[in-house]
Amino acid sequence: MQRYVDKFIRYLEIEREVSPHTSLNYRVDFKRFAQFLGKKRLEDVDYLFIRLFLADLRHKNLSRASIARILSSLRSFFKFLARERLVKANPLSGIATPKKEKKLPVFMQEAEVSKLIEAPADDILGLRDKAILETLYSTGMRVSELVNIDIDKCDFVGGVIKVFGKGKKERLVPIGDKASCAIDNYMKASRLIRLREKRAIFLNKNGKRITDRSVRRVIDRYVKKVSLQNDISPHTLRHSFATHLLNRGADLRSVQELLGHASLSTTQIYTHVSTKRMKEAYQKAHPRA
Image 1 (cartoon, rainbow, N blue to C red):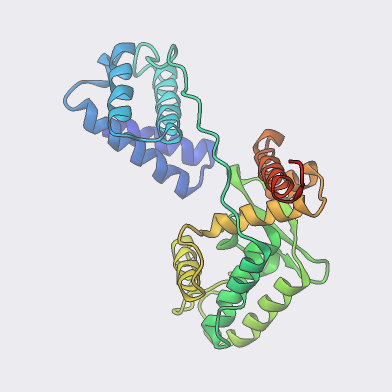
Image 2: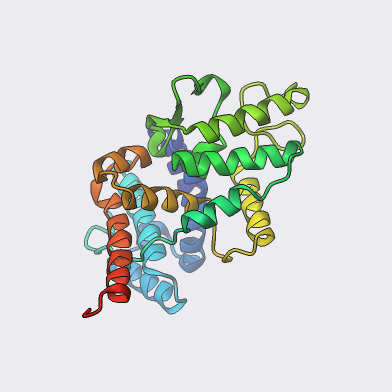
């Protein structure tokens, strides 16, 4: 199976130009399938075998979202194999994708965001961390987009940054004055370590481009420092960005463009958050609720 996986991943990277992160996710999904496959040949995989595999995933208590992702990976994989005539047919053609659970996104209150952003110290790493937190909240960008920001893609006078989102789609995102100022302070303080990496905005202590894993560790550190809830991640700041915009009257279409969502339905989940909060306020405050 491995040579087929390698062939498919090469196709994704060359023809579809998927990110290294996406390629890694595919490999993780295929590794799980290969373990269940055992010594059985891919050519012998049929509809019934796929059903047994899905039952095994459910037995291991995987979430619907995880099962749907694995199923999507296998669907693309076998579609590729069938097109290349490496298998006779796609065994997933009759398999329906399980509906995902609709979970409301976790977001922070505005006061909590301010508390988190003000937590870093005034040394070089602290200035970098504050700039990271300000930028994530100011733009709503994904952590993968943040770590790939280059200096020449930033227009702080115009107040915009050019980022590359999912599927390498390019978009311009506005950045606020506080985030721009935080980046400027960090850039001035980090001039001496910018000898090796001259393009990237955010660097690690060795002067190389910071990774998304390092950004997650940065947030974990300050979450503990200011004693906030433990389930806060870079994506929580993205959720907070969208929720706070809608709470303050931004229209849904604009928020969709700012987040880089391909579909408006993806953005609509934030309206449920706002509606839920509104109902809770009504139930709490109205004398005859």
